[in-house]
Amino acid sequence: MSQKTVRIISAIIAGVIAFTLVFALVAEIAIYGKASAAQTVSSLNKQLTNLQNEKAKIQKELKAIEAKKQSTMTKKAALDQQIDVTEREIDTINSLIKALDVQIAEAAAELAAAEAEEREQTEAFLTRVRVMEEEGTPSMIGIILSADSFSDMITRTELIGSIVEGDKKLLAQIAETRSKIAEKKAVLDNSRAEQANAKRTLVDRQNSLESQYKEANTLIKSLNASAAEYEKAFDEAERAMASTRASLQKLLSTSTSSKYVGGEFRWPTKATRITSYYGTRKDPITKKSSMHTGIDIGSGMGTEIYAANSGTVVVAGWSSKGYGNYVVIDHGGGKSTLYAHMSKIKTKKGAKVTKGDVIGLVGSTGYSTGPHLHFEILINGKHTDPMKYFNKA
Ligand SMILES: [Zn+2]
Image 1 (tube, helix red, strand yellow):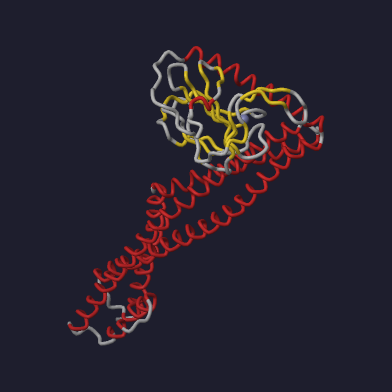
Image 2 (cartoon, protein in one colour):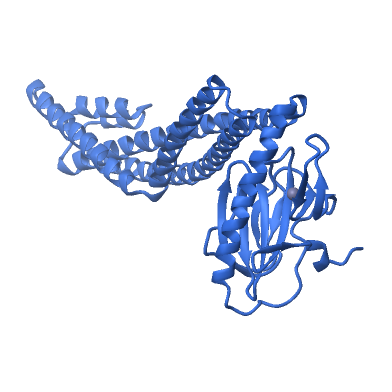
């Protein structure tokens, strides 16, 4: 075979390989674009970007509040929202880490399949070479078998230059599989790197959540130092809670025509320590009398809050200077329950809940000096002593 023929064959092989490489890459992108794990990851990343924007907005707000020397409760409300965004960020990052686990498993499986395919194709090619050798083609072909890498094998094959159409096809297939392997490896490496990054961000956000909680609590405690500030916060909270109760009464007196779901109320959380009972109390600092419309159950941040009975969630909302994150469940027959100062609401307005369902987590949002559950029982929208419904043991 002449030098010229060898060169032509080499050029053909190179062309075929280049074409298959490009084709494989395009096909790969098309497949990954459709993959659900990748879609989940990208939508979660979008969500994280949105949360970043929300955080930046709150940061600006906080600066403005500081500059205008607005009330402590206004600042607390902004801090509560910052905490809420950080918590949603942590949830999103956790989902992202899980979605990347799926993506990593998928990529690893695809990589293993491609590697098995490559082994099969190489074996087929080597078998083909052995056949050629048996048919008495130049003994140089034996050299191919001792190639220590794929590119080496191609070089050796090109040098021999005696490959036929079928062999070219096999080589092209191997090249395609090789590029597929490289692609899968890249996806796998990227997903792993992204996940490692997400895990670092998670730790960072958990730390900032800690300090945000501390800041919010310190802020409320600092009220004690300034009588004027304290009174302002106290009045703001009274007004906020009174207005929430007024709208609740309106809502609950018109909505309830259904029958009571029946049965007894269950205790709304694992914690049992009551830190403040229902009834009139005199504020130790302002000396003003105020009505405590429910009971406070002292509990750790994030403790689960249960629906005291089955019913329909009529409010899953936010009252910045009063109840914070709060939920109201209508149990029918004019009976409803209210859960306030949650760190997180775990239900939605309109949801049907069953007694014992987790509807939120204990927090310190709104007018609250530390994590606790403020729990109310309402009869036709009017507060009553919740302890009447529980056995005082
Ligand atoms: Zn309370």
